Image 1 (cartoon, rainbow over the protein chains, first blue to last red):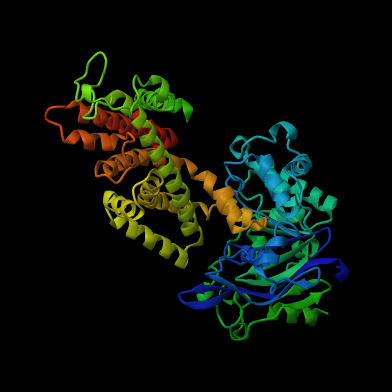
Image 2 (cartoon, rainbow over the protein chains, first blue to last red):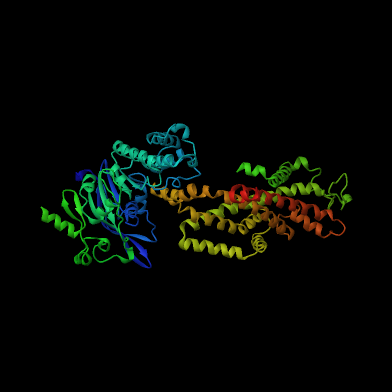
Length: 331
Length: 276
C-alpha cells in the first residue's frame, strides 16, 4: 500500500481498562493502517479487542473505566491521542464516522429519520434546517431507501432492520467522513439483507473514496468485503495480510484454526474443527504468547517471551516465533 | 395512546370534569351571577336560595361567584407551580442521571432533604419566609413539588444514556446538552407529564391548605382555601360556606387524579392489557 494514501494509522495503540482497582490492557501494541478507498477487516472472536480498538479511535470508551495507555492514532498524519475533547467531538461524525451493530436500537425513536440525518449534518456544518434536510434527503437516496422523499418524515419504528441500518449508514456518511468505522454492521441482519448492506457499503466506499475499518467475527463477510485483513486475538494483532494471502496462506496458528472452524465453499471440508480453550482474561494475560495455551505448535520459548509482529513476506506480518522461523528456513 | 385514553370511561369523567372547571375559571366574569367582592350586610349569611344559589358569607358576598373566581386562583397556582417544578425537577433529574458521580450525589442529597420535610410544612416555611402573595405562593408550592420530578427524570435517564442511539449520537459528535435535551428528554417526557397531572392535584391541595392557614393569596381575593377558613368560624350555622369550596377542591383533585391515572395507563401498555 502506498503510504501517502494512508488515512488512518494506529501505531502501538494501547487501551487499558480498570478492573478491580488496577489497570489492565484490553488492546496491546495494535498497529494498523488503512488507506483511501480501502477496506480493512478486523477479525477476531468476542473479547479480542476489535470493538475496543474502534472505540479507542473515536475516544468513546467511558472515561471512568478506560484510558489511553499509549501509542498514536494518526488521522492523515495528525495524532488524535493528545488533542482536547472539544476538537475530538468535532471530528466525530465529520472526519471519522461509526456505524453500530444494532440498527433496531441505534436510532432515536422520538425523531423522524430525516430529521436525525439533518441533525447530524447540522452538528458539523453551519446550515439551516431547510438546507440540512435537502442534504439529508440526498443521503437517504444514496443509501437506496425506496421512495426516500415520502419516507423522510417516518419514525424509526416504521422501518425494517435492514432499512434502519441504511438510515444509520446515511447518517454516518452525511458529512462525507474520511474514515468509516463499521462495528459488525451486518451481524444483527439476516443473510440476504446482510449481502445487500455489504454491497452498498463497498459501493459507497468507492464513491466517497473512504477508508473503511470493518469489524466482524464472520470470515465469510471478510472474504466478501475486505481488501486487507487484520486478525486480532486477546487484544493484539496476530496476523495481517491482504485478503487473498490470508485465505490462501494463513500463517499464524490462530488464523489457521479460525479458517478450519469455518465452512467453506471453495474447499471441500468434511469436518469443522472448533478451537479448544478460550481467550485468557485481561487480568490474567500470560507473560509469553497469548495464544500459547491453545496452540498446537507451542514450545517452551512461546510461554517465556511475548512474540513480536514480524514480516513473513511483502505486506504479510505474523506474531508467531515458530512460524516466522520456519518461514525463514524455507526461503 | 389516544385510543386507550378514549376507551376508559373514568378518564372521560376526569377530562370532562376538568374541562368544566377550566371553562368556569376562564369565563368567570360572564358566569358569576354577582360580583365576588361586593359586600352587602343586608344579605349576611343567607342560606342557598334562588337569588344566591350557594348562599352568602358573613360579608354578604355570593358564595357561587367567589367559588367560580376561586377556581382561577386554584388552577393558576396549581398549573404554574407544577410547570415550574416540572421544568426545574426534570432538568436536575436528567443532569443527575446523565453526569452521575458527585453531581448526582449532590442533587440527590438535596432531593432527600426536600423530601424529608412534609409538603405542607415546607410550603409553610417558604411561604412564611417570602410573605403572602400570589407569586410567592406559586414559588413555595413549586419548591415543595420539585423532588418527585427529579426522581422520575433521573431513573429513565440512567437507562437511556446507555441506549445505542445515545451512544450513536456521541459517535456523531453530539455534545452532552444536545444528547440530554434532544435525545433523552423526549424519550421520557411522557412519564414526567403523567406525574405532573397527578401532582397538580397535590399542588391544588397545598394551595388550599396554605390559604386556609392564611399564607395564601391575601384577602379579599377569593380562593377555595381561604373561603373554607372564613366559613370555618360559622361552620355550625352556615354549613354552605365550607361545604361548597370543599366539594370544589374534591372534584378538582379527583378530576386531575383520574386524568393522571388514565394518562399513565395509556402510556404504559402493561397496565393497559391487565385492565382490558
